[in-house]
Image (cartoon, rainbow, N blue to C red; front, side, top):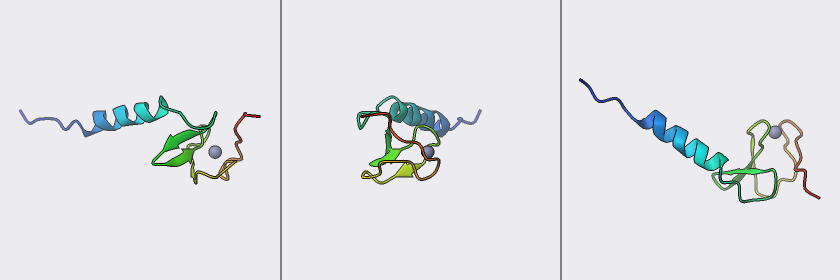
Length: 61
Ligand SMILES: [Zn+2]
């Protein structure tokens, strides 16, 4: 029997780890040192205050 690649499982684990490790500003996710919109998943620079993709804004202050 050929061995099945585990790349898919690894990707899922990494994805879940990122989703469950939001230590930045409330609301924003983080991915590859960028802010990630929790609504559409769009990536933005660290100084972004709103999502330019879907218009989402953090609910802080
Ligand atoms: Zn968005």
